[in-house]
Image 1: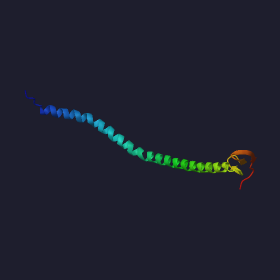
Image 2: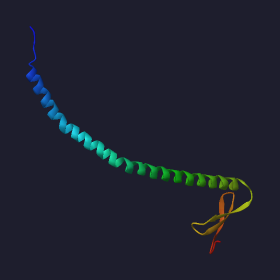
Image 3: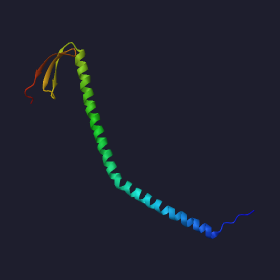
Image 4: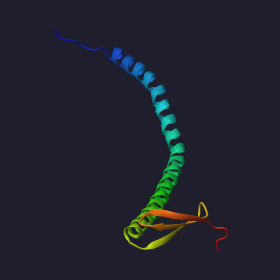
Length: 108
């Protein structure tokens, strides 16, 4: 038993297939155009995020260094002073214990 495909039927199937693909192709083009439009904004957001992370890393590195220095001072047997500019106070400390605190009126 041999099967023959009618050339006209084959041609009609292609037309239906092309008719169904045209809206999909248009949607794909619209999606690609939208991606091209949004890409610069996404790149700018990524750059801002990287800059923010870099700033946080630098702040944490400074804070870590200060904590290391305070630990070294706390391990010593000498009195030491810690200035807290954000609260405008000066702490007199010994072995990591605050003995007294003084308000700072003015800093130069």
